[in-house]
Length: 351
Ligand code: UT7
Image 1 (spheres, rainbow, N blue to C red):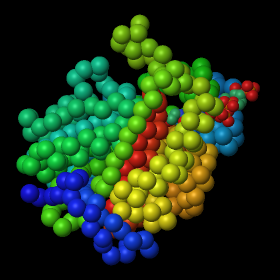
Image 2 (cartoon, rainbow, N blue to C red; image 1 turned 180 degrees about the horizontal axis):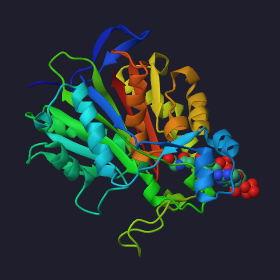
Image 3 (spheres, rainbow, N blue to C red; image 1 turned 120 degrees about the vertical axis):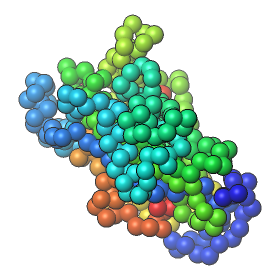
Image 4 (tube, rainbow, N blue to C red; image 1 turned 90 degrees about the horizontal axis):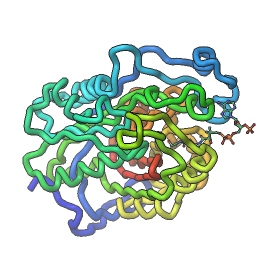
């Protein structure tokens, strides 16, 4: 056996991050590489307003959301091309060939095709061997956490599996109504990817605990309006922004649930080095962090540069933070997402 599963014995370990750590399971895998891909040119708030003749101002957008710019795909770019490029960067950083990859999971709700999945397109484009697992995960903005959760099952049940590509990729510009100023200013396109590598015995870094939840009764507050079985192919974003905002802050700012997940991971909130939330609105991030009593300097915030890239926002933020030199080996990260469904999720991780 290369690793211990979730039922491993609780063992008291030395003090780390200023807290007494109770180890209830060794992480099955760690992040061996991270990468991202954004379309070529950023579009400023002013440029967006001018391009679509919006009744808005750059000041309104920035002050209400923190967003300064976003990226939209250009001709020839798709969710799969962004995902492939992000994955290539992650593989390079991990010093791995695509031949080493045993599964490709792509979190997206803006796929190239209704079928086949983006994951199979990425598998083919990269040259990941036939016979590997390749599938898409749709949990809207929480998709990356959902995909991370699936890696635990894959590593636990497939002893030969050594490396998994987990990608968040979206082209939300394809599902925006550019006559609706309250939604079209919020979203952008992009992709982020991580390579997860199976831990060696005794390795303590990596993915600790992942949790997810959903409440389908809230679907009417944020949805695409149409779909394959609903009179159209994709539809456009329909959102009751203020209501979604409140739910997002309540869910992402749930101190008891967050502390419980960290306790299960063997840590406390005080031991957290970085909160890496889904990037929807800077005001949501600030309000949630305040409710969690996490100081702003511990919150990775990229919504200003990327806008809301849905399932791509967390891996994009990770890749960006790593490029900035913010993430250091051994640090404790909490990834946190909330999105349409509603869906939500959290994951604790030692970098
Ligand atoms: O990924 C998870 C999903 N999404 C989110 O988490 C987004 C959640 N919601 C939000 O981020 C915010 O609710 C918004 C940014 C969408 C809106 O901000 P708000 O502070 O909640 O504004 P509001 O919806 O209460 O609207 C205030 C006013 C309205 O005008 P009236 O009715 O007061 O005259 C809106 O029509 O702001 C108006 N407005 C705008 N004005 C200029 C809405 N969008 C714009 C705009 N430019 N782009």
